[in-house]
Each structure stands twice: as structure tokens, then as C-alpha cells.
Image (cartoon, rainbow, N blue to C red; front, side):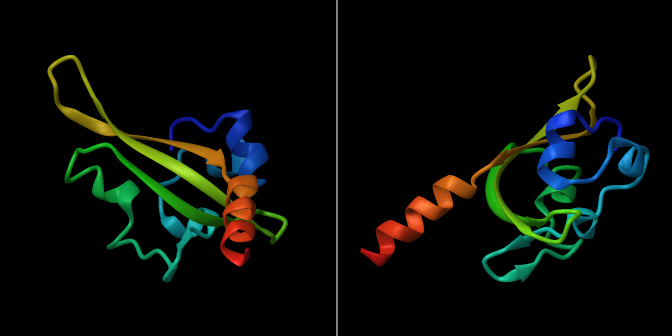
Length: 108
């Protein structure tokens, strides 16, 4: 992890200093989908390094304080000037309100 901004700190509860220069693993932020914990083998963030395609996902993450946060993610490959894959970027948006509204609509 080369960058961890203030938005990521607020959303996850993890300070920049605690994640910077660590290898990405889904367990870092307790990444879950509708089927449960996301494994390293099926992690879309890690898959972008072998299949460089942009993707969008809905996940749950485990905040550092223990509560669950529903997020929408966009994962994008990062290329250098010679079009070589150099890594990936993950954009996370809080989707808690949207998920709550969707659940309320289903219950109606």
C-alpha cells in the first residue's frame, strides 16, 4: 500500500501509518461479500494484478472499532508510461445509506 488518504482512514478506522507499505490482503480491512469473507485467491484487488480490468463491487468491511461498513468499490489497474502494469488503485465509497434504503424497499 503506497497511499492511504484521510477518506480511507475515516471509512476503515485504520490510520495511514498502520497500513502504509504493507502488502494488500483482504483481511486487512475484513473484506466480505454476500458469501462471507473474501479470500486472497478470490480477492478482486489482487486479481487486477493478473487481469488488469477495472471492476466495481459491493462489499462489507470491518471498521477498526469493530462495526461493519457497507462500501462500493472501484478497482483500477495502474500502468506506467510504457503501458506496463504497475499496481492497482482501490476507491471506496460509503454505501451504508444506500444499502439501508435498498433493504427497506425490499421489506415493503
